[in-house]
Image (cartoon, rainbow, N blue to C red; front, side, top):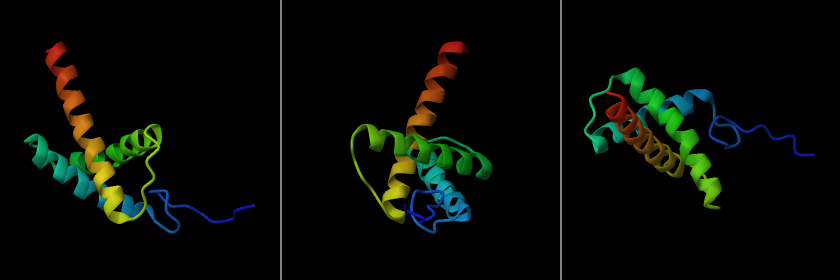
Length: 94
């Protein structure tokens, strides 16, 4: 049985603090890519949720990724997708 504990980003020993840091950076990058004007909290939230979306997409596409940079890229792509989806939904309901 595998007793190794996996952290917030699916890596051994990666803590929740690192997930917040990666989320903040990914959210900030996504904010710049999408020309959004979000605050720090929203950047962190978009980045963390983006990390989840990025991991789901990678699993669906059978793409394995490990490490800080790969997680940052996946979280950024996920955050960009979330921002554009939010804009599309908001545009239809507004």
